Amino acid sequence: MYQVIGIKNTAIAFLIVTLAIFALINHGNIITLLDQPANLLKALSSASSLAGFVFLILGETFIFPWICKLPIVRTYFPPIDGAWDVTLQSNWGAIERLRGNTEVEGKITKQGKVKIFSRFIRVRMQFEANDRYSKSSTVCVAVQRDWQHGTIELNYIYENLTSNPKISDCSHHNGAARVQVRDEDGKVSMEGVYFTDRNWNQGLNTAGYISFERAATGSNQIGQNRNDGTDVNAQ
Picture 1 (spheres, one colour):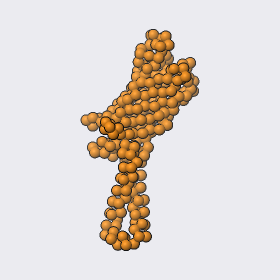
Picture 2 (cartoon, one colour):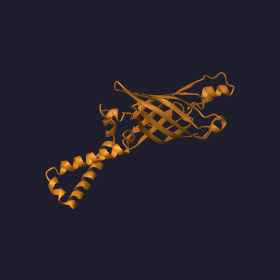
Picture 3 (cartoon, rainbow, N blue to C red):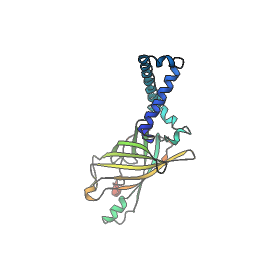
Picture 4 (spheres, helix red, strand yellow):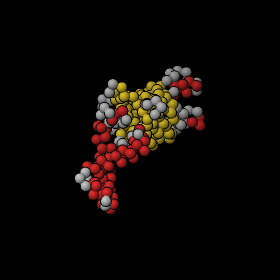
């Protein structure tokens, strides 16, 4: 999540917190410390350690998702932690038509659930479709600000494994998504596009539209699962 403000601003924030802690602890002794370089260095080192502890507690525990819900904070760090209902519209139907199967609809729509684990330093995503054809895990996830448009994006790459792929599928593929995060009237939603390299050597790699809506209940399983039948490559 730190990518939203960048490494430079993160370092500046850490420095400010360190100096604030230093001033708070040594507010009556700062002038004296300036004449004692060894003690000054020791005091700054202690303040830096405490600042690191503060960042750890606030940024890497369950406290961080709650902080992200605060009005000002959420403009920088969107509250994306938790469970989401996901809708995918795949171009697999269009691919099937090109292969001669005219009975398939142009777009294949599937539902699923995703669990997002959001912390200041790291973000993880766990996805499961309604069926259990295959599973995947995220390779990397980043939340970044588009400084040109002022929007925030969720970008991720995942690896998919299928133990018993169908004839038009493969046992392994990679996928990626670029999703825009919207926070309107206190409600967060996400939408964007995804694409894969599945069976690319046969021209069967897929892409589509993906949207997230906050779920009423959570999901704790990981997977980027596929579909049975003719729309097996819908994701």
